[in-house]
Image 1 (cartoon, one colour):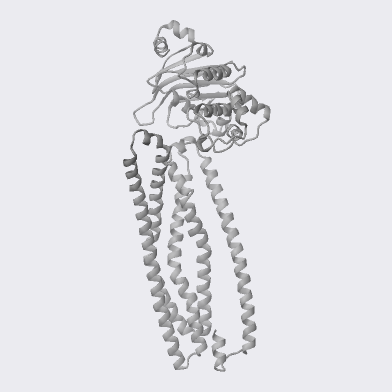
Image 2 (cartoon, helix red, strand yellow; image 1 turned 90 degrees about the vertical axis):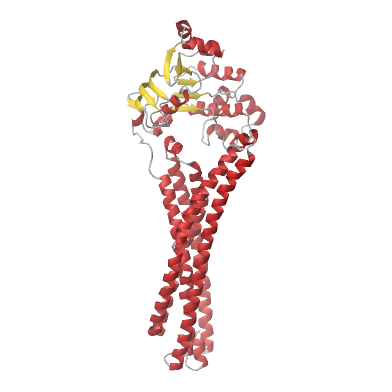
Length: 528
């Protein structure tokens, strides 16, 4: 532009034909540079997000059950969805945009210095003032972005609870109060987003009009210098054009930097959620099989000074079959959860073999213990994938697990590739339980824990599955919390453990407990 205008007054260094060639070369160079930038930029963002999300998920899955129980999973969902989108758009994309704006700013000032340093110094001073004013307002955007993230966590948690509690909501006709609850969280979120938008709008307006004033001021000053003969009209035009590459960054950088800082806070938020562990992990590995489980004076409570288990002493011998019975709230499920190291903070000791549970590595523990729980999670995948949990097993082992868990008729009818649906929506409660049992059998662990695993099954299927599991002639230690007090099944256990109010009050074979004429006899008679 400078050369074009100066050539009109015979003050230029190039002819029009030479300038045309220079323009074509520069134009092609810019197009190629833009193409390289776009490709590089897209590849960088894709690779960065893949690595970041993979690392975040691996870190999350590396946590213990106890860490997961004490965490707010809606916060994880928000961090891995809404927050990641902000990190991608404002942090990763922001790195490129901010860098380019800074390069434009520096190179523009460099060219201005080459043209006329006094006018450049005045431009720098005016631009710095405009930038400082914009940043003063821009710092509030980081706080606003953090508030939006917090409100989004609450809103997501409310939505999750409504979806999961839908049957309860409909059964008790609580649609109106639940709608009010959702409206409150939704309104708080939208108000926070509105405040963020208003702050960003204010930053944009201040940046835009402050920059416009500086631009006009430099334009008038340039024309004054032309009249005084200090610069040519071409240099004045060049200054005005270069000020676009100065004021453009000055107008956009406060908003970009504020959004970048806000996104960085979300990175710290996710890092804090995923870093550290609420529970200590042991290092010792268990032998493959043959270890007894011994509980010595074990007490535990979810709340301080309110124990669910009190002074429990038990020995589970390797390869034997145990039934744990008792009324609701007696601590049966809690006992199994402690064996899985789902909770820390228990008093006393739990030994598996010669090692205390706290000292055993979780990887080794989960290699040796399989669990079938009452509440079964089913992935939105085929039957086979839900049984194998997306791992490879020989067909013979899969078929054996299917047969023992009572799934054979269902598989023959619908096939291994049958879609189970989201949360197992295409399956009945009993079918989900059978899949859970098949998973555990396929795991081939030395210890099998079952927590009311047949509660969703009818009497005939319960008898069939438990009878098969208890008759299996292997070295698996089977510890089964059960409400089923069928005499023929109870006689198959090596020992029946009776719990009440968090303590073990009786234990022995079915015949011994009946003969003792204690609590179990009364409980059995009433239940049956």
